[in-house]
Image (cartoon, rainbow, N blue to C red; front, side, top):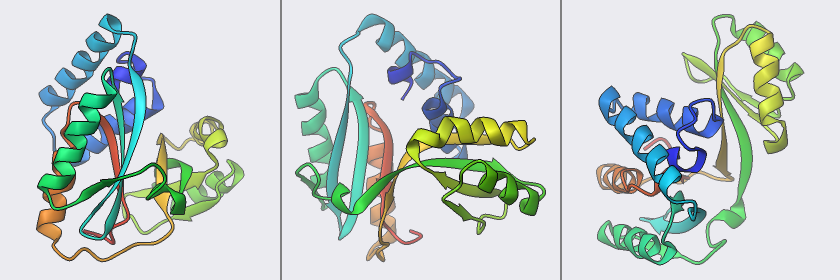
Length: 201
């Protein structure tokens, strides 16, 4: 994701990517190196383009967002990763047809009731309070920045990102193998985000 925004840490998508990496206990030095590498690639090559890949892994739908300067190379490598882990890359809209694009805010909520009210005032379509540490607020993509600013003004810090949300969740037959496949996709140098419709793998 650092490629897409030139390493700008104020970019919502990059900030969210860094947060996800921290949640997975990726070392600080590794995160910093990835941000700097992406920023350098962006400055050296203006021909980068965003691409979306869709596929299946053991009956689980997967959407991969990537940034590349060579669509053919990246497609071949992502296809190879799916195959290596027993899955298959599909055609455009083979998975995304049943998903929706949404704005997502992960809100630090000490006072959950007050944070929920602030989120509603900020335009929340849905609030998930099952996370003990954060509220997960979903808004229309076009309302994401405004909602984040409104929550910040109300005193609630949040991390914002555009995500893909599946309309259903499916059980994973082999959790270990599935997580290994997702990890391999997430560590591909061109991949900025990976989404799936697995039920709590």
